[in-house]
Image 1: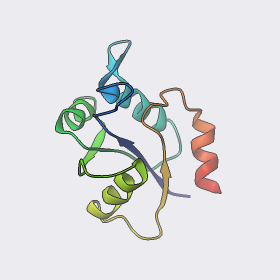
Image 2: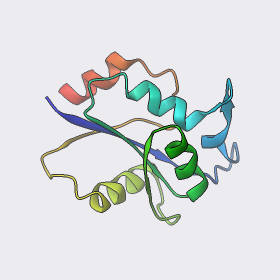
Image 3: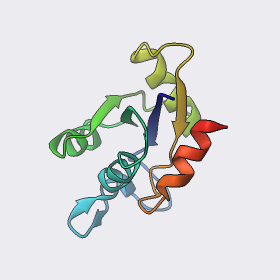
Length: 115
């Protein structure tokens, strides 16, 4: 089974400003999340972000990133915009992984794709 992980990331968090870029052992959190998601059976891992600095941080670490509007009201809206911009097939299974879950169990990602 093929599936894609999309990780929505918003730079302007009210509780923790610049949260996606917060360093965990010298690596931005959003990169850590994407690296963890890449350990799953996903055929593709994409960060959907609202700021070029997040996109650049991802790309510097070999993570695919799609720039989305700052006007997205929530992560689901950001994910939807990314799906449309990337022209993903309507039958593609998309797994939404939260951008602040660097320790998400890989088995959980795979299980969600199967459901």
